[in-house]
Image 1: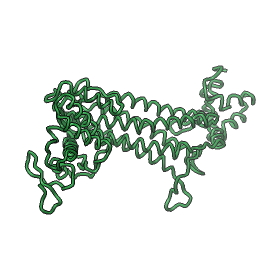
Image 2: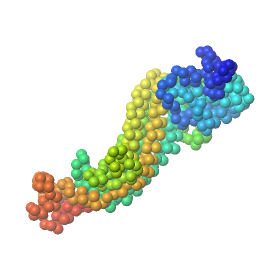
Image 3: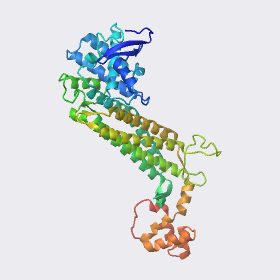
Image 4: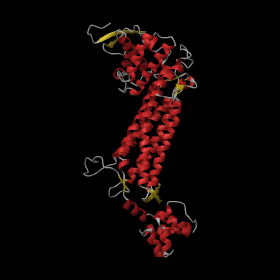
Length: 472
């Protein structure tokens, strides 16, 4: 029924009449949720909405093949669901992420949009729910408690495969390329932010590349759990009100549609009562974030200056750095990535708190976990791409500055310890520091070793690997 002002229609659900915007494809339950949860203005990422559409598409076809749904209704639901997958109805998903902890509000948003669109396809009108009903037909053999966590897994895997893993792969290759480019350049190593033994600049970047590679492996390992779908468990994992073949047939069709490798959950009771798979993936993302902060910080430290810092590398200049100091250029790209990673670490804390809120047969913080997990994936993917394209690929080494810093370092005395002993080497280092001299100058003044032997021992290239003749 359309109200007199023509802006709304009146729908009825189990709780009574509700005014719904006339042109909306969602219905009464969605409208109630909109009114109940005007919390943040945040909406779910479209990947989750499209995953719900995919599940509804596959479920309708399965129910038709099992003889549970008329083909005419099935075809209309499939078409409407496919339009959801394609993003045609994205603007119709209007509920805040801070809602019912099971995600039922957003799930019913999908059921109502698909039902109204299916009825429209069949020549009916929005809000009537005949012949297609959001619960009886679109949601046949399903519950929010198995559908929403399944959608989280599908959406997360999609984002990981399409966004984050390619970004990590590109960054790994870029860091490997820099490791090769910088291999001939020796620089002073640093431990505790103090001078240490020499190292190849390329060896440092080799370490960064390996961090990214290991991070990728951690994500791939955690993805194994996300491929398990609790589909078919319905309300509490027992599969009540569903066909015994529904889950496997639906998951098979999902895989066929998107080329996926999803499988029925080993235990629907675990998969619905807990969200350990999401917690595990978030932990892997947090580890990647920690690695990236280390890499970004090292790069901006090495690029500090331009006159009074370390200055061993030069970062690409991307924008003016100060509203007050003319000519100042800041390492804004690494700073951006560090903030992204801080957000990911914060998201992980929220996901952890969400994960421990799985009481009995259902986790009741799924919307928060879903939003934060997908936000972390999206932020990391974008931040990594920008860091790679606008920073890493344009890094330039300053070989002269690296050589200068090695020559000044007191840590070179370490190479003398096997020859003259630790205590004597420490005395030389303290003398050089007190008198503001290089290690070479202090040794030459004391005439401890012949010049040729001194040159051999203090050659930085002899310090970047194991000794060829220990003690000699």
